[in-house]
Length: 373
Ligand code: GDD
Ligand code: MN
Image (cartoon, rainbow, N blue to C red; front, side, top):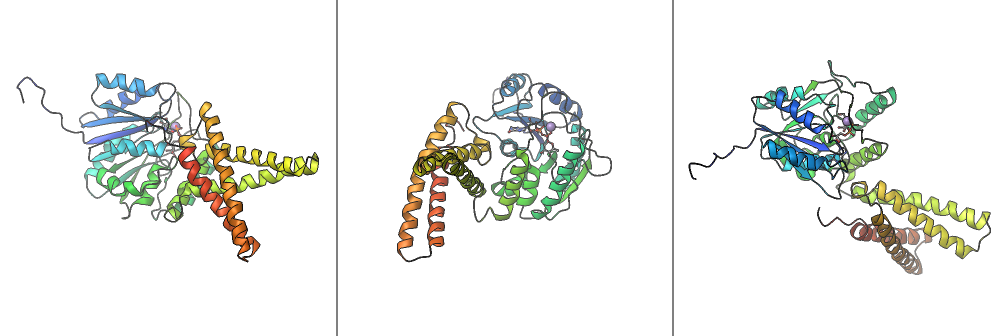
């Protein structure tokens, strides 16, 4: 190496991973606070942004040209807090990894103490908790507080430890512990820390530090009603994911609701409006198929949700795939029926084949991964 060159920079000790979606206004302040609270430590921050319309990713790139400790990952055509955190952590070579929200609601002042605890060697993960003495949930209303309590109780189904705040999105973990279970993580929804606890083969040795959940000043929360559905899917994946993919379970659930929609439409058109049976059956099929597509798009494939023209293209391919699925369904069912099987068995076999076909084909053609991801 020539004398004039800068010496190589050693890797940081701590990577702080920050998932972001429309957090442009909060990014500079978070960096300032990390800088203040982590003074004297070798740290870096990685913002993992899902192509936010407010161009958070572009701002991060600009800031990283001024500060080498700032990095960014921009994901295209993807959504999801948990997978964003996983990919941010995978991009790090530091021995310690923290995850903190980008909206300043978590208390970054805990980070140095978290680091000390992990360096002590007896702890795998340190969790920021709103529910131990000294912590709090800020200005949450009673209904959100109640939902949080119920969700906490449900988490016992997939993890042994009795954490006070398994829903927390604020923690620091040893990188080797993370890498040991990274292949088993579900990556569904918001609860990346719960996912870690539930996926680790060895029970994690944990510590909890209290913090007060702050009020959000800029931007808005992305946690909506669908968070409950995603949480259910995460629990389900941890419980039965080794047997059936949860996406298939979700797809089948949506399909069952679609059957009800079909019957209601049929009742209105055929019974109510006295249309011909064939006409009303065809119309009900179209309505049910559209309903199934729309619901799958927001629930089953929320992380790859199609919008605008992509939505129309998706609807078309979904309808085509399901039409072929229906033919397969009827064909198989009729064939099995001719083998003298009971009609219920024949029907179920047909439905199953149709469902698997629809699921497999639409997974590849309707919600295909974008080229850049
Ligand atoms: N990359 C990415 N992709 N980031 C996302 C996404 C996404 O789809 N959705 C949300 N985020 C980012 C937000 O920009 C924010 O930085 C962070 O994830 C948390 O999102 P909020 O929308 O602010 O969630 P919250 O405040 O309602 O709930 C948070 O705190 C709870 C208590 O710790 C979450 O972390 C919950 O999981 C947690 O239980
Ligand atoms: Mn928040």
